[in-house]
Image 1 (cartoon, rainbow, N blue to C red):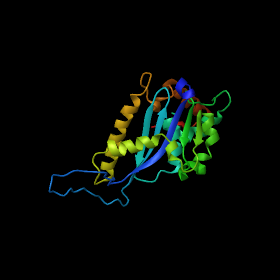
Image 2 (image 1 turned 90 degrees about the horizontal axis):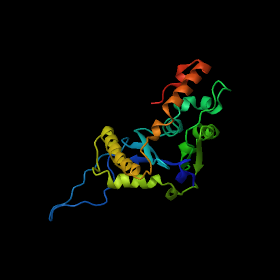
Image 3 (image 1 turned 120 degrees about the vertical axis):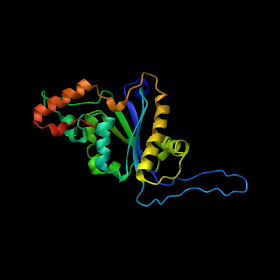
Image 4 (image 1 turned 60 degrees about the vertical axis):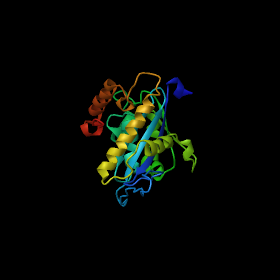
Length: 234
């Protein structure tokens, strides 16, 4: 398998939500005392997380969260900037995928990857899925799972473990507090995932090699004469 050989990354991508009050499976109290579980109003206070579990030579967990809805445009930006490491993110995708002759060759991710995802609305929206061919040109291939098959997406195990093992405080009073708790839980998950790697640690978000990314930015600016098109990815 290419992932085992270190020639390709397999990336399981999905979203998950964290509410102000998370389900409490069990608790305890002193004998004769009633257990009291804190609860917060959940209306308009949900934090949505877009995450990617990288399986390959360098196991990794990447994520970002927002209090709003994760849409196709945000998904495309995440895939281009965080998973592909494309300088300039989604704004530079067309230029990177098609190139401009010898002046600006097609840009490719150093190690090709296959992104495994379900058929959620953002995933099949034209804004994202319509760029499938361009993504393939830069080394990011999309693989859609059959409908109603979450058990085939390995990141589901990460979500469950994060929510029930690394999220001890089940109620939070603000969006900021939820975000902090999410980052803490997923950081613990990432530490375990990185411990599985067989080679020296490396952050996928730091790829491609900086020199190559700088070459792409310089060449693109020379071709289009516009710095904004290839601004540094944050």
